[in-house]
Length: 235
Image (cartoon, rainbow, N blue to C red; front, side):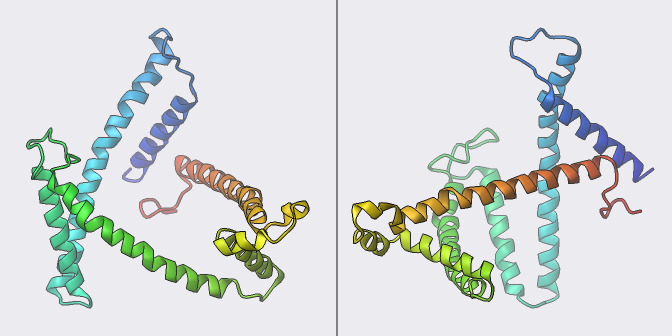
C-alpha cells in the first residue's frame, strides 16, 4: 500500500493534467459540467504545486545544511568550501526573508533597487557567473581540440564545419570573403557560415528536440502506468 497509493495519485493527477491541457476551454464558454471541472483543475492544481514546491525548497535547504555540516564537523576534504557555502546560504536566506534594505514585511518586493538582495546578486552573484562562463570558454576550447581530431570522416566534417563557422563570424573571414568577385558571392565564408547555422544546425536541433519529445512521452507513460522503477517503487 505504501507504494500503491503514491502510484495511484501520480497516475490520476498526471492523466487529469494531460486531459486538461487537451481540452479546449474558450474564455466565453459557459460554465458548468465538464468544462467547469477541467477549469477548476487548471486553476487550482498550479496553486497546489506551488505549495508543494515551497516544502521542496525547505527540504532542499535542510538537506544542504545537513550534508555540509557533516563535512565540517568531520573535517572532510574541502570542508572550508562547505563553510563558505553555508555562510553564503544563511546570509542570503536572512537578507531575502527579512527584506533588508527594501520595503519591509512579507509583502515587500525583494526586486526593489534598494533591497540588499539585489545588491548581493549584482555585486557578487553576477560577477561570479561571469567568471564561471569565462573559465568555461577554455574548457570548451580544450574539449573541442580533443573532439575535433580528424580520426574519422564524421570528425573531419565536424572539424571543417566548426572551422568555417568560427572563421565566418570573425573580421578575418569577412576580409577574405571580400576578395571574391560578386559572381562568387555564394562562396563567401560568412555566407557559408550562416547557411551552416540556419540549415544543417536547425535541422539537427529539430531532430534532437523531436527525440527529446518522444523520450518525454515514453518516460511519462512509464511513470503513469507504474512501469518506471525508481527508488520508491521496485519490481
